[in-house]
Image 1 (tube, rainbow, N blue to C red):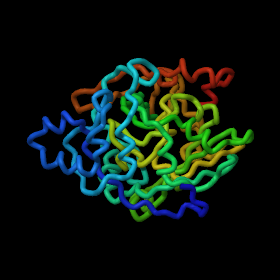
Image 2: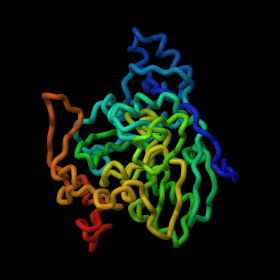
Image 3: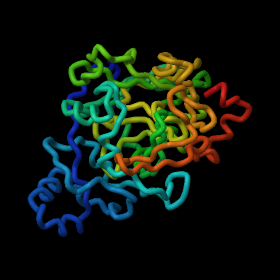
Image 4: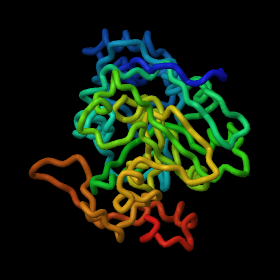
Length: 347
C-alpha cells in the first residue's frame, strides 16, 4: 500500500533467526520436536517449502526465536536456487553462518566487528517503510510489504570484499534492484541513485557514541547503469532465511564488484538524482574512499594493500590469503561500464 504522508514509522524489533527447514528435516529432528512444531505453526509456508532442498545454503537448524516472524517470512517459501555457474554462483567454500552474522561493519551499532550482533537486540524491522523521491514518476512512501510482494526471491552466492582486505562468500536471498527501479519509473533526468540508512538513537548505540566518526545518516550511491546491472541485488535474506539486524535487516544493497561499504544496510530512503550524490565515506576521506569503490588490486588504500585479501573465517593459527581480482572477479559482467574511465583516478 502506498502511503502519501512522510515516512514516520519507527522500526521497533526484528525477530531473531528462525528455523528454515523442510518436511524431512522436521521428521528427522526428533530431539527437537517441540521446537520444530512451534516453528511450523508460526511459519507454515517456510516449514513446508517445496524448494528447500534445492537451495545451496540454509541457516542452521539450531536457532532460537522469541517473537513472531515478520509477515515477509512467507516469501521464503519459494526461492529460486542459485545456478551452478557464474556469475550468480562462485563454487567457492561458503563463509560459515556464524561468521557472516557475527563479523560485521555496521557502525550504527558500534565500531567493533562483534558490536552489531551484540547491540542490535532491540532492532525491529516490522513495520518498515521506504521513501522514494526525486526524478521518478511514482514517488511516495511505500510499506515493505508493497515493495516485496511483486518480487520473486532468488538465491545468489557472491564474494564480498571489504576495503579492509578481508573477504567472505555469502549466499544472499533477494531480487534484482533493477526490478524495483522500473516500478517507480525514473525520468530521463535520473542519472544516479542515492540510498540512506535508518537513524534511531534509541536502538543504535553507535549513533550516541562520542567516538562516532560518521555524519549520520549513512549514505551511499550508484550510477544508474550500475544500479540496473543484473548483478546488483536488493537483499532481504541470507542462508535461506531473512536478514538479521546486524546484516542490514530488513533490506540492504549488494554490489559484489565493489568494496563492501557501498552495499548499504537497513535502507529507509531511495532518491533518484540528476547529479552525483554525496556518500558517507567519500565525504569523510575522499583520498581513501572513492565514489566508485570498485575492487581494484592495483589501487591501494593508505592503510591496506588491495592486491591480497584474507578469506574468513580465520584463527590465530590459520589464515587464508589469496590474490584479489579486479572487480572482485566480476569483470566480465561489469568492466564495460567503465570503458574509458581511469580506474586509478576514479577509484
